[in-house]
Amino acid sequence: LELADILVRQGDPENAARELWEGLLLVTAGDGPEAERGPEPLWRLLVALGDLARAAGDYPGARSYGLHALRHAARVDSPVGRGRVHTFLAEVDDMLGQAQDAVEHRRLAVEELRRVGDRRTTAELLIALADPGGASAVEAKAWLTEADALAAEIGWQEGVDRSRAQLARLP
Figure 1 (cartoon, one colour):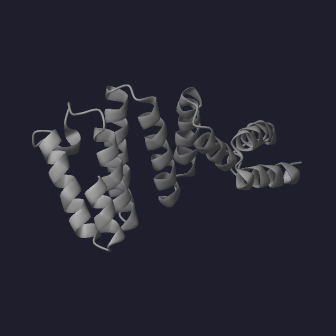
Figure 2 (cartoon, rainbow, N blue to C red):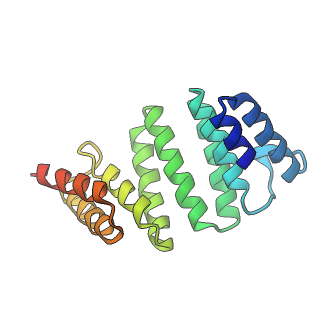
């Protein structure tokens, strides 16, 4: 993953994708994303490929990588993996115009990330969930109140400001 990150920073996403695919085929004995087995961090490799697909504008491809990553994160029982992949899928679903799917992935990501104590990402997701189009006022208030508390706990001032601004706009 590190070499791929370097290649992306150098403006060479094609070679980054080739490196990731080579690693994917190596760790899955040639089976690729559809593999039934693989090492614990396989989901990370698939999300990295999904990120490259998303950056290239291939949202359906990015979603496909994300779904494979989710299956592998579940297979190795990684709550961090499931939370991160659900977050990725929510972003991709937004780009695909699948708002309801995005909301569901954010809800599932919040559940997973609460369990592992990732307060920053949980707060970000709660703020996104409280978007006026995706929640009732009661849900939005509860999510924003929790996001505000989490952001304050970790000293994330932007999160505090965003959650409080959205709370002030609620009826």
